[in-house]
Structures are given as C-alpha cells and as structure tokens.
Image 1 (cartoon, rainbow, N blue to C red):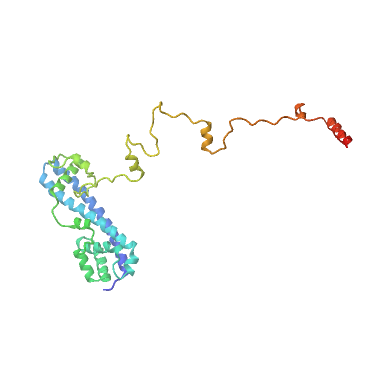
Image 2: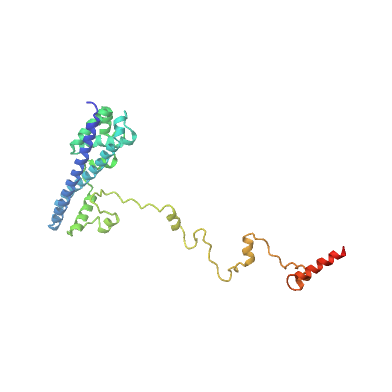
Amino acid sequence: MAFNPSKCKVQLRLAVTRLRLLQQKKTATSQAARREIAQLLEKGKLESAKVRTENIIREDFTVEALEILELYCETLLARFGLLEQMRYCDQSIAEAVNTIIYAAPRCEVKELGQVQAQLFAKFGKDFGMAALANENDVVNSRLVHKLRIQAPDPLLIDQYLVTIARAYNAPYESEVVTVQDLDAASLIDPLFDGASAAPVPASTGAASDLLSFTADAPPPLVAPKTSDAAAPPPPGPQAATASHNFPAVPAAKPAAPAPSAAAAGGGAPDFDELTRRFEALKRRK
C-alpha cells in the first residue's frame, strides 16, 4: 500500500474527534463509579470498594493516554508538510509518529489503526516494527506507563479511597494516607498516579535578588543609615558651585575707577558747558 496524504490527514482528524468523545464518555463513567464506591464504603464493603477502585484507576490512566494521543494527532496535523514531503521521519515529529504507531493496537480507536497503516507505508515496515517495540525509546514514556497492563499500587488504591471518601463524606479510615498527606501532595484531580509533587522552582531574576537581601545586608545603591551625631553638615554654596565647575568668586571686589569731574557733579555734563569748552579750544589755535 502506498502512502496517501489525503487519507492520512482525514484519518488524523477523525481520530482527534473520536479521542475527545472517548475521554468524555470514560470521565462520565468514572464519576458514576466513584459514587457507587462511596455507597460501598457507607455499607462497609471495603474489599468490593477496592476492586472497583482498581477499575477506576485503569480508566483514569486510559483517559490520560487518550489525551496524549490527541495532542500528538494535532501535532501531526499542524506539521503535516514535514510528514508529506520528508522521505525520512523528521526529528520534530519523530516522537509523535512513534507514539501513535505504538499506541494504535493498544487502544480502542480504529482511526488510529488507519493512521498507523499510512505511517507504515510512509516510513517502511522496519521503522514501524521498531516503533511498535519501542526499540529506540522514542515513544512517550508517560503513555507507555499509562497503557501498561499491571495491578495498581496498593498505596495508590488507598489514596483514591481517601479522596472518594472525603468527596462524598463516606466513612473510611486509612492507616497509610491521611487527608493532610493528600493536601500536601495536591491530590485534587483523579489522574494522580502516585508520583511525588514537583518541587517549587526558586525565584529568578529581580525577585530572587530582592529575596536574597537581609536586614544586615541592605540592597545595593542604598547607603546605610548613620546616627545624627556623625551626620555630615549640609553642603554650603561653595560646595554647590564646585560641583558644577563654576568660576570662583573673588574674595574682595576690585577698586572702582575714579569718577570724572562731570560724574562728580552728579549726572551728565550740561550742553552749554560743552559749547564753551569747544569755543575755548578754538581760540587756543
């Protein structure tokens, strides 16, 4: 069978729609099963409640796997040009291609089987068989864990029972997990798989710099406070002029020139007096 780009794209879109519908259906079924487990706890049927809880855990794992597959189908649709034009599987779509091939026979979505057949035709049988066996560890590790067929951890079953009992006010006393432990681990969503909560990352940037300051070490550019006795006097006018490089002010004023006779008389000389002086000069000649 030859690779058909149009058929592959159509099957990818149908797979996304089918995956979303399955998630909604399984989530609704899981919520109804939780109410039934709470009723079993009220009746004191603890062993029956634990068996039903195992089924809920498997359904929750399946829902999370379907979410991962939906994301990878949308990734292939967004980068379909690489899938269509490249002869070999590009690194940017390698994880999505390998994960879809690996998960197609392990989930109940027939459209993924059609997509898997197209990917086999595109990249060859050897590539497809390696992806089915996850020989190169390219398949999403979280999806591999969710699709693995194994009995749930007893601690995880106990955590589910504590959460269900608290949600529906059902009587259940756990010797391993307490409500405080669940709050500390932020066990709010039903998809909790027993992994420890991730540590809160340290602050970065300016916030971390501010947090690193203590009372003994003030932040930079802030001068430490001193007592009033040791405080320097306020700068005077000479310091202000010196800081701006203005010319120095002389200590004493220069002596003023001696006033003329006309100035001593108080004001400008009279016009008649100037005329008489001019006539006297003419007579000297």
